[in-house]
Length: 493
Image (tube, rainbow, N blue to C red; front, side, top):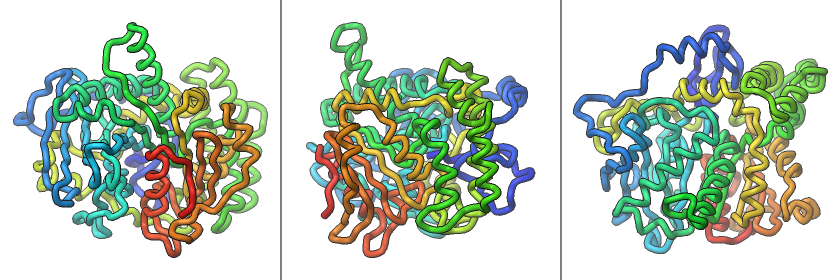
């Protein structure tokens, strides 16, 4: 997800939460001045392990703690946590939970939060994992709608430096991140404890900046698989079957007008005044404005061009249109205390000592975010990668919550409408149907071929974290996930 610590508290509205999408000099999703980024880069050191007693990385190998007893307490369900060492100074954190039901035949899915720079422990503990953080942030409760009910789920903190991962923070583009994820998965599948999963149906699920990550990771896996087949790449092929993108940032040129539309009219209430809407409209359409800058970025623009586009558009459109409402759940004014913070729990030695964590956890690594901001990756479209993956036959679902502003359904549905795939014309002709959960309408959906889309009622940015009238917390998301991972289109129940 687009989670982060605040880079600065100066000039910020008093109620902005110190987490989630980066806030730089008062701008949501802002960009540090280039000279400040260079100065920080010149003095930053690799993120280090917590103590000299930490186990030593061995490049190409895993370090694993099995069955720690943390989070998943369902009797007989296997779990493992630890590190995959890409090199002597690059260690990627993972936490694996076997399926509660039929683990020996269930598919394997991976979960990635976004940021860029945010920990996938957010998804684990606030959304879809075997446990959820309690409202006091003091402990966890077993999650009956966990996605590991019928799937083996692997949570990965990436790029290096994010969450519990540690080492040199060199990654600054989605493509570089994809290469490291591939390296990690090759290490993970080569380990005797996990080699049995190498031939399972494999899925990538992600959200927020995952709208960049997911298509890039999936397209890279397809490319590597083809290389293995023709002999140009050495490695284990990955049996990619599913890609799921939740409230994702994929194609800025189609999605940014959605901020204006949603701020003016959404299922809950307007977010800002008509004058603020008018100024954002001007910033979008004026000569040299946001639309022109995104277009130039994706027509051969330099890193600095794309970075400047992110800075301008978020300063003049995304950030001011948020108003004083929580950008991840607009029914609530800032700051929404839900989902509860993970900081006290995941920095407790009582937890970290059991799971084998060797670095101090942080929700978002600022260095990683700055790396991406400096390359302009944010404004570079991932739509071609997404179209490649869909046309390759990978079952793909795009989903969102209708209470999210930061990557709202207006923008996401504009992205979907812009896709040029073998299913796009059929999809455009379909009418929305009610996505019912045990007879209760919980959203709207469409299917076309192996492509699906669903808008979930009452859900914020982290769709599996929410409930709806008559629908249990996470139940709509679990139904969606279960149907798609079993190779089926969406349907009501």
